[in-house]
Image (cartoon, rainbow, N blue to C red; front, side):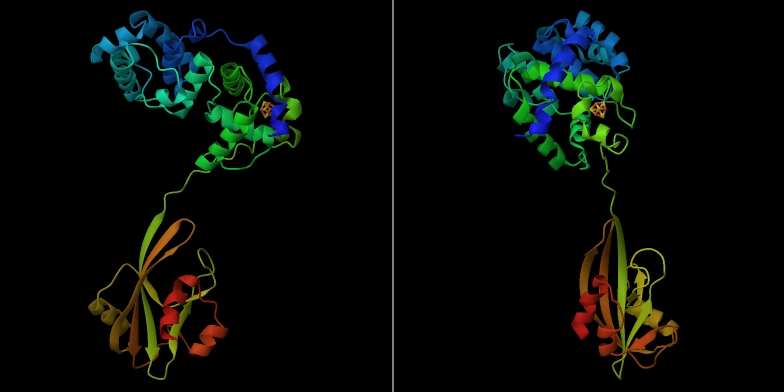
Length: 346
Ligand code: SF4
């Protein structure tokens, strides 16, 4: 049990009781109302949702009316909220509830999760707020608050961080789980704001917040997006003279593997014929070209797909440094990406 985290429960519940905002969807907390509001609130500002919600409820006040609404009318009601698949999923789910649950809203987290458009957060919100099930409802607000309270610099965009927060919250969930989940959401929306602008002086759990104590609110939560990996193809040549000297060259002083040595290589994959003409350009007169291996080397953001060839040559060229096997092993730093080829000929 996280003793530290447990301290936030009481002050948070008390604060929510006294400061709860008067929002249209809080007037009647039936599953239908909570569901529609939670779906509308995904990726949409509260202010934009308010009037849409009121209008939606006027036109489609219950599951039955939603399940029967023509698509054109539904999309019109959704106009301005964006992400229209949310509206279509609402109708699909309403039809399922009418047909498979006799029009009664499913009551458990597991059942709710099976409905179209209902993810872990929404299922948790409905199950806890409407049916008092002891489940969490974790969104970006909750991840931000908990990371700050714990002073955690773990990347909140990773599923494992969310899992960890979920586990910690489950341990401290009070009986009024729905009220607690709502309190956390409210704190995240009104006080523990993102982008380094939380209003800590108004926060009811300030005394237990490590980020506040250590002045880390602008650094936490940590959000590191997975970078798109770059793919590079390379043709690597192990140029070897008849007296067993191998050509190497120094990489540039900047960038990836800077200052290390490498076998001569070119971007892209080349045929045997193209390799021969490259070698001829250096006046090396290739005697024989033989394929060694195809391999992949993974760096942080780049993958190198490498094809290695052994090329015996007649002369040396000043363009490269010609070293013996012993020198290569003992004197020159060869990155792992190239060592795999070196091992094949040493
Ligand atoms: S003290 Fe500040 S950073 Fe900590 S939970 Fe409260 S608002 Fe968020």
